[in-house]
Image (cartoon, rainbow, N blue to C red; front, side, top):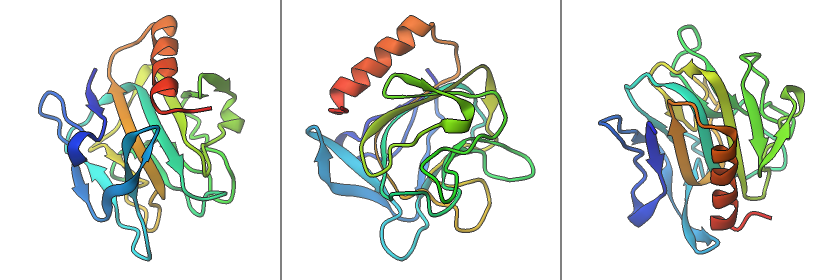
Length: 192
């Protein structure tokens, strides 16, 4: 595992092996819970500037998010997990503006929501409801200066989302194991 975050005691940093994510802008405790667990809110109010960033460059094979998009459709190409520059990095996951889907970046990333696989052209996001999202690619995706909640260095592409837990892995996980992990997160976060 490369990094794990679960929002315990108001800590918004994701950390493991010295690869800390730092908070930039408006990321804070939401003041509400999901199934009894604290939830962090990214980008609330008129100023959308909130995201997490690190100077590390992981090659991610799996990214699990217990999350909720706080809109009926994406208002922009909201970055979920990306690198920090459009020219030098890629997006593993971002919203598809004007839809309820995540954008297909044509990188061969597979996607599951609440334990169900979705085709690349139909990666349904948890819009206005809590869900477990899982992106994976066995060869991995290199994210230069990885960030969560912002799409690379594009202006105005911040994710209006609530996040309860994030697990990032740089090693391959067998299908039976990641299915068990998805089910654990579904139960923990009260996803229906």
